[in-house]
Length: 381
Image 1 (cartoon, rainbow, N blue to C red):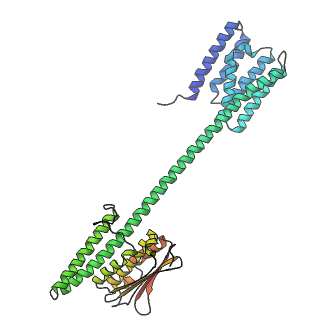
Image 2 (spheres, one colour; image 1 turned 90 degrees about the horizontal axis):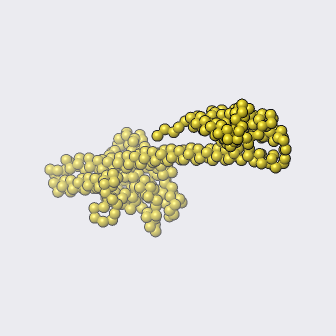
Image 3 (spheres, rainbow, N blue to C red; image 1 turned 180 degrees about the vertical axis):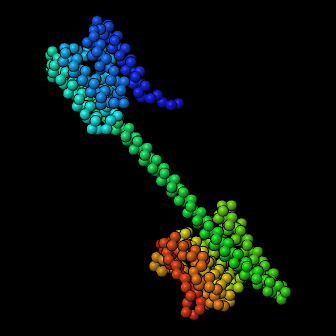
């Protein structure tokens, strides 16, 4: 339901005050031309107290001064005139900026003091009482204005906080999507690469060694099942747990399983995990996962691009950094995409940077390839 406009309320209120003034003048026998003009001059400014508050104060309190100067008495105008003067001053204080509000107060005080001075018997008590009548509504108006401004500031702050919260939620959502994308890329790239290599071996040995071919096919099947389980975990279709059928939780604790899968795919892999006293379990989960994925990607690159090579994975802690080193012997001539910093290497670098670490990847003088990542961690050797 739309609110009533202030100027309409002011017109109605001014009309009621004028009517009350006429009733008062009539009941006191003061319904003279001078009395009516004085009453109208003090009550009608209420009609524009919101549209022109300073003018309303100047006119109303100026008429009060003229009334007293010509020998009149505001008490003869009734309570409507007094209420009107208080309302105009309150409105000027509550709805104008400080400078104009102070100017309205000065006008009202000046008119009030002069009016008291022109009275038949001015006294200190009269000055004090009328000054209180002026200052009280003005002070109340300023308090209300300050409170409204404070409320607006709180609303603005609340809106800013809400916008910031929404922005953070949006950024967190984007970051989570990017993380999911990286995880799915690593899982699918590694799994499909291993399966393609294993199936290629099957086609070569199927007729010559059916038993070995059958074993390789079973390994492909196992690799595919593991990848599906991990994808279900990433997509939230399976909860973590330690019971049968629970989703895998990649990390350095499963690094030997990764090495064994690489060996079955034809890449001899040695693991040297030099983290003593349960250090693997104390690694932060993001560091643990990043180290596992970097090793996984590096070994997958070797499997794809350096047939016949063997690989060595060395993982230890130096100071406050986890040192991950993956090197291979080179095998057959390496494909250009492996030495040129392809998407796999870019992804490993991105993972290291997200953890606050760094990664280097380059051929070594012996013809092999080395990947080294240094990841920050609070674990100690």
